Length: 346
Image 1: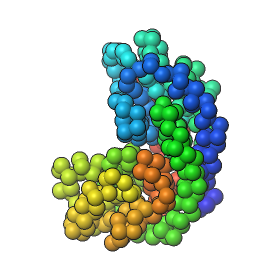
Image 2: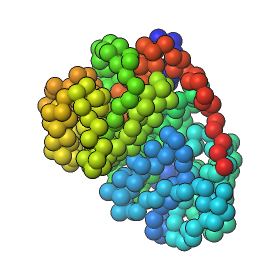
Image 3: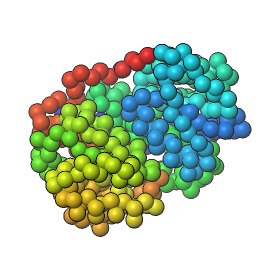
Image 4: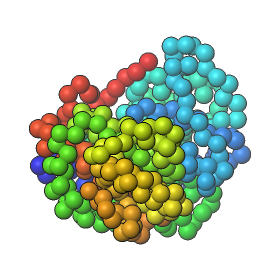
């Protein structure tokens, strides 16, 4: 199993993040200086996994930089040919390949309207990188498995670097520098939990819940499960889940709850108690023993990660769970049927 390309790329993530930080930190500081005073809000152009990174940016830039962040609607720029006014926006493109035509159209329109553009890409020779005023390379090396893993956490790391640089916050940068080691600790501690994934071999659907910074984790874990195991995994904010979807929960209904320590802890604990009272099958990602207690599958993460960085470690159990679930279902985790590495949408 460990010969799987996807498994190897999941394990490479601490090294990728470490290289990104050491190679790009000073450059990102210069990018932040170059953008200073040139925008009042952010629009992000992304699809798929990169769209989930953009969800992280909404909370990150909002909480630490007091910036409103919107996700672009690329169809307005292509199929409808009616792009919105981008006045006062910084337009950020996030893409592993930097090749999808609809994302490029957003970046090109931003340039046409005279707005500053920034690309977070793994391929610095891509069309998106050539369009953008500024580029942050992700340093994820060639990502050979179809499902993106290391380019996702590298995108989160690049956004965290940018947020710190825009805020001029050196202590937060120090916290980010410690993260590769915490990712290593999390990955090494998950092997025993993965032995129990066989329990979910016949699972056909599940809900994945997260809120705040880890709203992005809920979406990314759900996407990986769908891509790799053909399970219908539905992501929700824990708050949105209470507004109706919780009615689907019954005895044995599988729910993955992303619940690291932080400001949302008490709110998430109430959700956990309610799920367990409904006899849900709970899989819980957390660095808190009380939160993990009673879970059918506890997935422990490092205890030394601040909430604002927790999505970089909280997604790791989800990636490995999806990989192992594909294995036990007899599927190919490196090359899921129906998917291709570069997806071009218009």
